[in-house]
Image 1: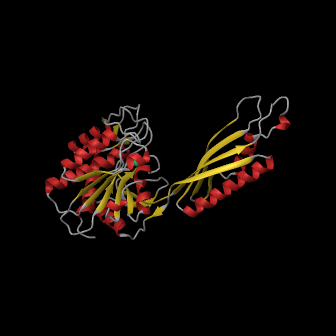
Image 2: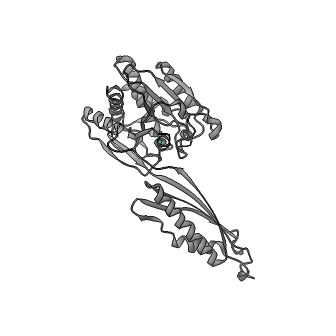
Image 3: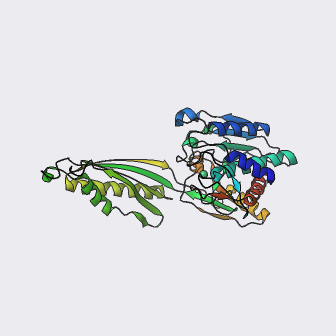
Length: 369
Ligand SMILES: [Zn+2]
């Protein structure tokens, strides 16, 4: 357990913000090779504009079973420069309060490395294991969207990248659609000739007032997240720009709500004489791993072996598993001791890391397909 904690602390001490994972990737590659695993960095760096690609690894196994994929992402969110893991008297690990801790997702990486280390020491039989440590996951899974899927043979994956108690796992995640809308009116002097202008902010405001923000129906969320426009107090604003997102476990519901938002803006802008341009992008695509699939059943058996309850549910956050699912890899996103993530209050528990190592070992040493 000391080794696990030290490994976690050493990895969190390496700066690894999204698209600048170079040093972290090199350190991880060295760790994999020291464990006797094959390590290969793919060519995603150039495609995503980052300093590192995704790191793939392979550890042959002696059980005559197809490989399983274990994954955890290399990048962390900001503020993430100069992170230091501090072990507290209450058994938690935090940063010094100025940065995130980076347990998201160093916890997952430290757990995977420790599990492989123990296998090497014990010589216990295990199945072949493929590893993928993606870059830039925090940018809507950008790195893993460019992973070399032709190289990955596994059809089942466990992605260690979830908050909650050990034993929790997500089997479904949403589509997240981002949108950008520009409402274009006409500038005029606000004091001399306001009637000559078309007020872009007023048109946008009346549209936003009609958009059902919040949770317009169960399981669908719509948010207008940012608005900007106008130039000066004495000018009728010619331009107002709005960005937002829509998410749901139902891809079709997301598209339907986007149509509705676009329609509202078009109608309201037209009524005011303004024009609208609307752009959208599906950042990640929804998936659902059936509860009776082998990847879920194995997870439940592994939890049972450890005597911990398994708790499988949907999440409203995305992960690399969204991309894996698009390439035919069924999987779960597994809790690995990260709490209050994406904040400077983020913390992790070494006792949970230890429990998660045992869980991963149970997953890959089980002799059933
Ligand atoms: Zn994460």
